[in-house]
Length: 201
Ligand SMILES: C[S@@+](CC[C@H](N)C(=O)[O-])C[C@H]1O[C@@H](n2cnc3c(N)ncnc32)[C@H](O)[C@@H]1O
Image (cartoon, rainbow, N blue to C red; front, side, top):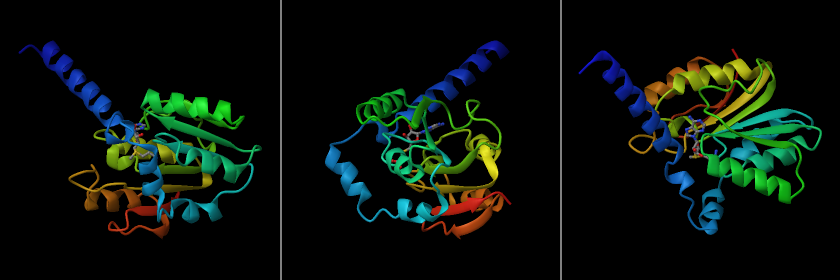
């Protein structure tokens, strides 16, 4: 096989992997009551609440259907802003429609990969919320972590969580620990608990 064909195949594999990731089980939305079930016992908003102030700028990366983007928008209030970002266009459109219907002007939803957040400036975000993102990224997780570090303000915080661990999710314990070593750990961090509140070290 020629070098050009090999490269084309590689690009094709990466593209289909990205598509597969973005349309993971989450984007095949089940009945609405499943969302409510998932939220039972969900502590993530309680964990992040003390770190988010009115008027701040939050990026909800891998926001899915916006389960948290709207709660985060309540926390920052209309003087703040929430960037809701996902690779799945369906999810982003839904959030845009919902925000418009509810008259919420401070949620800005975008289709983008977490591994390339050019739409966000260096050091511009007070809080990154990445719930279940890294575990659902088949590729480019390192790039996503670099982007999170790039966009965070020097005194910003990030909430990272794994919705699923292998074989359902892509991040294993050693990768999780390596990710956390690149930050200052504020809270959480145990692999079995699957979440960490971190800041830039
Ligand atoms: C498990 S869901 C979590 C959704 C949401 N954060 C929540 O907790 O309800 C993972 C989300 O990450 C998105 N995703 C996967 N790979 C991504 C990537 N490279 N960039 C941005 N979003 C991605 C998927 O489309 C999906 O919506």
